[in-house]
Image (cartoon, rainbow, N blue to C red; front, side):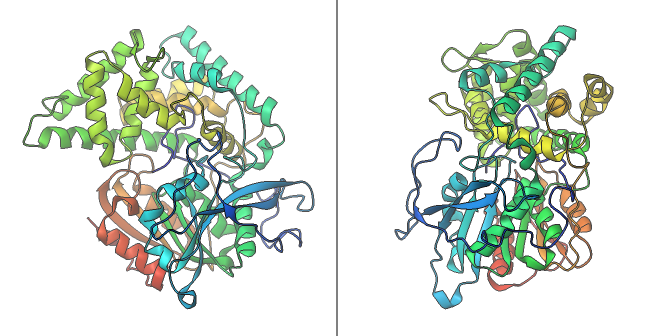
Length: 514
């Protein structure tokens, strides 16, 4: 699934977000009366833009149905709903079922923050074929992302240099270089995207979704949120509980944590995923090619990273596989059990001095295409997180917390601890320590947690249920591996999710799938 973690504000995390009632009020519909009445002009989709990641236009769905794209006008500043507008990119596929069985539009957000829904939905569209029998499938590029008034920071050559930096500094010189590179990145974001930076908070995106609901003609928002999409969905439910229809949260962000707690939780989550990978590899009947025991696998990885810190190895083209790139690549591979075979291959190659596979994994995490162009996922991820997260951490703060991070993960601890300085020099103040997702009066929301999830640890699902409030969140547990549950194709999970979205059957709270 989309957008694994990157060295800045570790991806797919959305660690801790907002809420600010001062930006646009705390309830009711403050839209300009003309905006909900706008008509969308659906047309065949173009090839994805550079900011969306490039590539080919989406292929037709099974049966020949074409994806359609449109733009939705929304206020740049929700506090001034009759002021300047921005265009939000949408994608849509008409329901495959009978018209009299149609429920409405099912809106997807796949996470990040910073992921393009316009490119992701068609990439995974066949996985939602059953849901399409009763829904139009809809997704969008949230504000600041892809085609939706994208935040831009560094150019492609600058990003190549930026991602080569050492994110686990060992001395004062490396610390200074890291802090300077971070400051330069943040200054470039302000120079190139000053008008958008104050207006990419998750509260803004939630208000965009309610406008989208109205323009699509739905009385309720039917919603499927994954990873950061669960954070966005929770914020929407808080602001507009009366408008929540059937909703599913999968790979759930803990809404009670601040950004430090979220990063520490991720360190624990990725360490758990690494432990599970090592156990899986060495427990099979054939020999594990990257270690004799689970501990040996982890020890060899630790040695590889230490060696790369001293001397990078050839990667792709003229670029070298650094310690940071290798750590990124390993994290990317831990997002799905389907990627574990690539991790084995990448480690085998790296032990022989060839960094190509790990660098390919790292590039995909960072949004770098084969032609050297970057999507804006990193810029958008940082802009949204920094606008949402109130805390600002110094190098001294990180150093005080390093022992706790290293205890949580010998491999990923330093990496995630130092990502906490990403927002230190950000131009816009953060909104809150963490979001308010309390949603009294909302329809039930199915909250799905995966016990082996590295990026959004399982405990976040229970915290989300508690924070949504009594009678709203319904917890479902999947005992599996990887980021998210529905995409694992586990029949128990899919039956529960489909049963709720298609027929309104709420599974019993505490249901466990394995």
